Length: 293
Image (cartoon, rainbow, N blue to C red; front, side, top):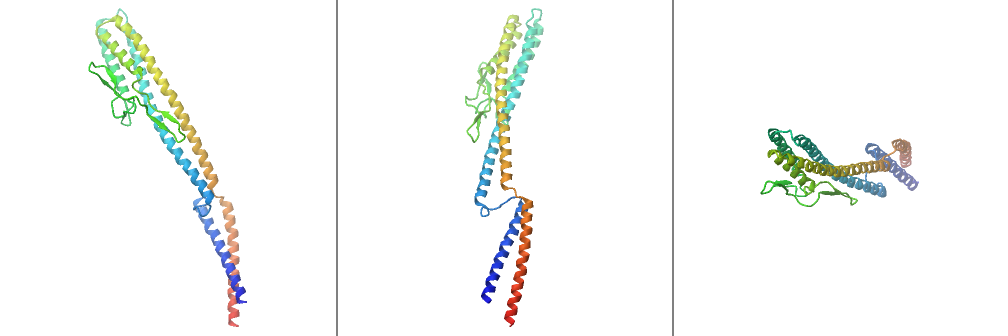
């Protein structure tokens, strides 16, 4: 009789432990909102979660790289757009100053504006982004354009592009280099225009107008190139955002606990636990009675 009672008692204790485990796991799931918290609870499922989270980290890295490229290209676009406006203004002034009725004094006054326009283009070309030279290639610590011995602006960067590479191997060029001929053409056209105005050279002003128009078209071409790259980068950003959202939905679906189901399971477990406690109490009373006999 004592052996049988002991066996029953051990069986009940094992059941109590099992129900307590259900209660503990249920409370942990409700508190965390996830089905499992450790590898021991669900090895394969836990690994799947780690794989999804690893993919999320990779995508976040890609997004940061692409966002850096987007920022650099946006700054380049701003500077190039300003150069386009400068070249358009120079063309307007050239049309005005090419008339035979314009006086030397008027051309001399216009030369001051031409000088300002040239200086503005040089300033745009030497613009920095986050403390780094924007148009100097990968020679970010150098000023992109410097004057040579004759005072002509020459490229001071290198011939290497700045690029970011995503985890899937996609490479995104995120700069326009100053060795693009359009920069030199813009400097030369503005310099020639200024000289023609200073020397009251009507024919030279007319010739400068053609050079300014051609150089302006070259800057517009660079702007279009940057615009195309920006569109591609922004599409890439959107695609990464979609993939991040899909991964998060996948992770939530994989990990998220069904609260109503857990609560129902805990309620059933609680009923079973109370029944086990009652049986244990009865066995303890019976054992005590048998002992007293």
